Image (cartoon, rainbow, N blue to C red; front, top):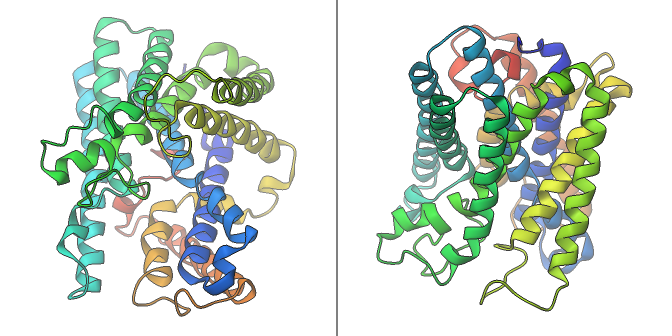
Length: 372
């Protein structure tokens, strides 16, 4: 069955835009707030909201990946060619991640430590996720072309990554590997222990595989015939996941010798997956019946150029070109800075889409799914 038109998938762009806004507020308040403001409940909730942008980007990358796979299958492309095409796309994003680290190092030179070149950031992880998803789809499609097998295989992989994360961060740490390699497994960087601000394969790629399963499910016949029922089911499953994860978290028995809820726990992974499904359903209904796409949607607009606004805003928040002095602002001044960043990135996004076709296509890795 052909992939739906881009107009039916605008809610995905809207979700990407939401992820950008959540990312902006997390970075802006983290970079600029100082003094007592960093000890406030406002800052705590801001940083808690920061646990969602990366899962959102990875989850949506998985959905878009499923759409790309389906488009290639609809064109009759052989399985090896599908695998090569999608793997190469992931390698390109991984290359952008390395290029971004090099740019940040050169901008901050000579003060930046050389180890920053090997930091595992979200772009690196999205690229690796896409390459791993290409391998999984190649294996499954080589055995069977059934979409159900793709859904189940993706879910099983995401679950396995979640369950293995606490082990690779603690008792199964591959600490004999060079730290730049180990960092891709558990985010150890060069600090001797896994770091929560790094984006290693475990657990982050798990969100991409859940998104891949969700994408293949949404492309199947029943959700295409009855999308409202499908998204209601997604929301219900999201609520169930959150409840089950909380229930497991409150059990006295522990599966792992070291339990870290916020960083490695499969329970927190399940809660975030549940939230992603709720956001997915909410975005669909908001864009279908609410004002989500009336006349002009800043979120949907920004969602079409999420790589570009991610790439640029970092320098104006954390870099030398920071528009406010770091670690010295109160909540009001940091909020004004956040509004400035949002409006600037929205303007940049509009300029980028108005120049579409002028050589910027390589920056469009998170463009509309129908164009992926």
